[in-house]
Image 1 (cartoon, rainbow, N blue to C red):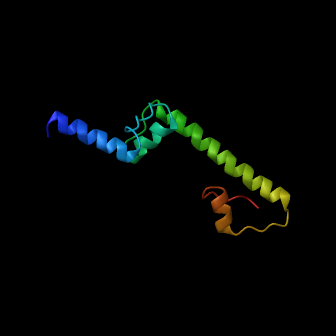
Image 2: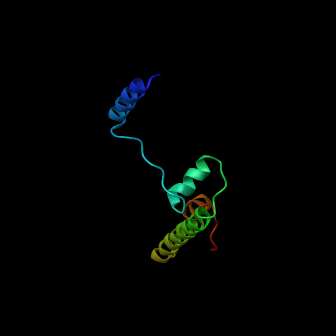
Image 3: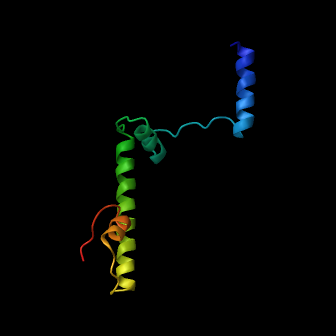
Length: 94
């Protein structure tokens, strides 16, 4: 494939996709950590603390939702599946 063919193909591809290809997020972001995971790579030193903080934030958010639900209705009985869904596969104490 010649250079002219490649550039013509790239222009066609960009028109079909709606724009040029996206540039990957730099390391040290949640997007980069997910990119490492999709590629089955270990997280780099920049991505590891960012991913840990993100996971901690998500866990605290799920925990807060469960607390609000239990306070809104003290007689609310959740099934084990509902508890696991709310807490991300973590069971809550009754």
